[in-house]
Length: 69
Image (cartoon, one colour):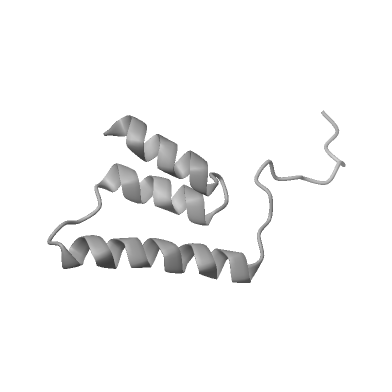
């Protein structure tokens, strides 16, 4: 390993606009669920955080949530 090599993250960088879009998408989902009297489980909230951080894309998020149900 070369200690002088620059660090490159395995997670692709996303723009602030994309991050804000993802936060809005998740907040809309939370609001819709709360309107119906529910809340998101902690494991789903952890997946949402990974989605917002661009560790998962939308398809991966959906597939992982469905697989855990």
